[in-house]
Length: 383
Image (cartoon, rainbow, N blue to C red; front, side, top):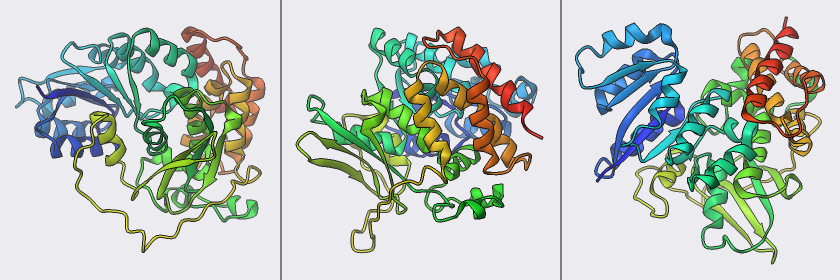
């Protein structure tokens, strides 16, 4: 029987590459459901190609348009709205859910999928950033596996295979450094969204690419690693590695370091999450050690204060990472729309951290309220 896969966010970078993996292994995997927020034409195009049982457009304004585009596919059920996302992931035929949505919106569908005992292939890092303790506890209670899809967390996971019972001394989390790695603070004062969107090694969606430029993305990955692998913040070290060849590593108590290396290709961690513990053939470029130098640098927390704030929020705990994530989503969009400057993003996030209500042991309702409050505070600071 083919494994049935639900892709939350099928029109984004991760979703489209996941479909390439499914297409390459059509004898093993089949698409059960595809979802998107706004990209209705692309979603319809994917539905025509992969013939899922259902599609969901989260933005209800596009429902009629999607129905019209799929008039010639009467067997495909069409749904709309956020509640439909929560419901579709629980469908009985689904074996695994790839959470490739961007941002806080991925939280509740992931919770519903876990409660329905679906295997989670996690690409939505915000889920663990805002609710790491809650999610990991829920996964344990429901005996639900969470397989990381982020290239860094997949690399850590792969470096742990066969060594799960051995004590970790520290996690070495690599970062490309983004397009402004060598920029001074003065130079960063005048960078534009177009500058930030020119990532040197990875092809990602706009939101994540901006987060990579500010290194907030790496801060979120530190928080994600803390929950996925049970390692405290002070044992997670970020290494700036411009070549993006060493995707991350684990250092054990005997000093041995295990790392996963490869060319920058997100299909590999996506496929590994689908197929674990088996490795399947994958087409594409191979790493040539004779053509690659490997460099590593310490991150500058003064120039990239978003990384420092992410560490701070993790150490503070409670709902503080949720506050940081909400503020970041607001300023990230504002920067892309030329409504705030690059360095101003950090100022607004820091101010939101000070003003938002701190909850030391948040419930899901607390996190939903925190997200709304922090967004409001951050939005009020934007011109």
